[in-house]
Length: 382
Image (cartoon, rainbow, N blue to C red; front, side, top):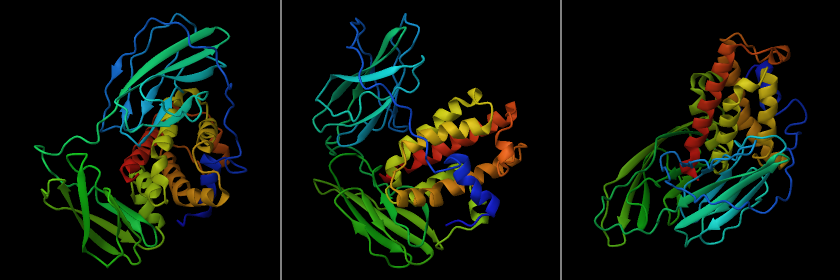
């Protein structure tokens, strides 16, 4: 657990997680059912996946209604991976939501009546279609999406063979470290072999896929090499990655020296299974940053963030305690330090309720966006 001055240490749960109790606010309920899909002549427009960002966008269907359906699909469109349907950017008051599948093998949408819903890409999918229907007392609007599913089984023959052991990492003693070779090329039918090339010896756990993991027991710089092979037996050159492991606790000076995006990445990666939440967490910070001009004070911004985070972070008491200690406490201490230079002392409760200046709004939105980028960077560890 990071050691901060008591005022800052007390700040983290209060700023981001609510004054009391932690995550006490429940998400706003959404109507459980919606009218049938309206008759529309618009054909959905295919949208291309963007592998670098993992975000899919779509063109909006024009609407004559006073409300507007708007959204996006987040995630990597590849069989077996989870994707998120996000309609939270829709405009209109007191809306209900309904996600409907219009094309492709049937998927299970976890809750089609929520603004944000999730599904797993089926193994036999090539193209998936969805429509978001929103409505309120003024009418109904809809927006359609087409998702082109990436083929994970494309042949490796004739394509450049390249191992990629991932980016160098920092970690702490006693915390699980995950090595990820998912960026190796060509994607598909590859075999992976991880070996330790330096540093204190560890028991490296590696399966048939691109990842391997270990738990360091001593500080030091650990080096690993990855070699990939095709089903035909061709071998790549080795790619290496280094993991710099520090002591069991991160000092305040080290935490403050990190940029907030790097601190977000390292802190989330230190939580077992935390990378699975990278997209949902980053979206919370992006949404609050997008809405920064609607908040009169930092207290209002943190209240919405608390509500949204409550729906993302695991609910078990012990697990939430780990998230507070390893992610939110260092993040909020870093945020407080950055905002103090703009005249906003977040360690003082009375300052959190003061009206934000234009400069403070800009700086706060910037810090939230950098945090979101750092959280997204852990996506490759999933």
